[in-house]
Image (spheres, protein in one colour):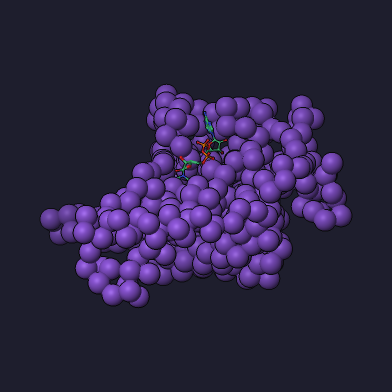
Length: 333
Ligand code: NAD
């Protein structure tokens, strides 16, 4: 069963965060998180449902409507985001290992993911801090003063896929916070652990209570409720086409803002002149191999189709197959 000593992140099943408090699921249900390297459970999280989602949305709504976060100067929000990045750098090894074990990616990829997460927080902190507070627009008449002012949207529901758990979450959480929104994030039910850990870092960095919410649980309950919820102003979803379609349908009756990042089927194109020398050929094969097989090929931007110019086709495919046979599967570490 779950190993508490090795993985303190499991925090006794209290992985739902609403209104500044860590909670169990209202129903008391839990879910074991499996290590894909051996299929054995190594952590336990709360299995939230619609009731937990409603609690988290209500807390995020109150924090937006009555709290300071949307109104404080952007430089203060940016400072919190920079502190989050510093904490991510501090905890890089712990979080990289956790991501590797949870998602089954190599430890090195887990570490690089955490670096990119820290970069995302710094990027959005910089973007918002340097933006002019209002852009004057020529309205065609000296009697009209027209200014474009950016305002936060409100409560954002952020739904993420399993394969790049914290990276996908950060690309939603960092811009949402930078712009002054509050949020409820729903990580994939199979890889939620680093997103839970990030909430702790947000709190440590000084984010006001209630601004950040998380509900661990399945898509058809937690995700679906977030998408339809009348108190959610925006839903940002990354995942597969089938789930994305359901999110768009659930969000339609309340006409909330919807952002969907869905699956892909990406071709790599190799021309003969890119293989003109042995060194160039070697690089092209390696890149094609990496594009198709990194993270076991379970990447939205994976090079899952390969289009090779006919004159180099046979040599290219033979070498690619030869190298593919040498790929070792196993524990990410
Ligand atoms: P998925 O669609 O099964 O799940 C994604 C998220 O949606 C999960 O949190 C899931 O619980 C939730 N969900 C499921 N049903 C839902 C519903 N009815 N309402 C609301 N939420 C629901 O995808 P996955 O297997 O976790 O991830 C793999 C997919 O994500 C692949 O298709 C991949 O191409 C895609 N992906 C896309 C990008 C991108 O940037 N475009 C990045 C990474 C992954």
